Figure 1: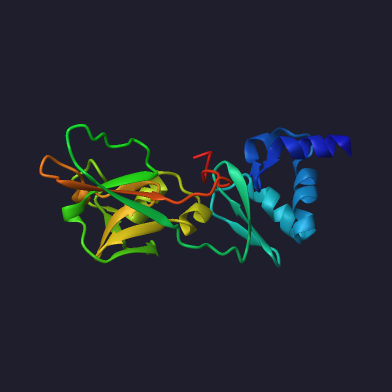
Figure 2: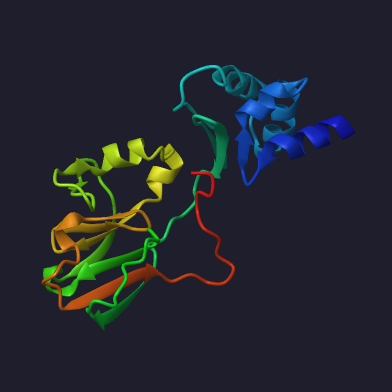
Length: 207
């Protein structure tokens, strides 16, 4: 029993099972059972999940309240009916001068105010959406960007966009659009970041 508990501590944190560590354990299937059976997964499902460890990422498995995603390096576990709410953003407007330094933090976005068009709206990304990533000339599909950045399916479901009129200005907390960049003609800058409570922790720390 102690060995099982110790094994679980080694492989299972923050609703993620480290596949490489799991496969190093003496009995991966037993650990999976101890972790997943209390969440309503049947023995047959757990066997299928164990078999999926050797397959390509993308498979999902469902119990009545939970789902498991076989990702590249992890089994991701999440509540099926988890509600996601739009991020709350803070907007600050400042005068642009030579002393202004654009933050390198991807969780802070800076835009040329004159390039932004009303209304500014927040929405989930959709298939077919595209933007021009900051620093690039050509446009890129949001779906391709998220795949390139190794977002899991669960991560992709939680991606929000800040839109300026019909155009995407920012994949929130990820990448801004080149069309709204600050340049030598800029007079005023709009600084945008997500409101966070003190208890919030950054999402996706392993990416």
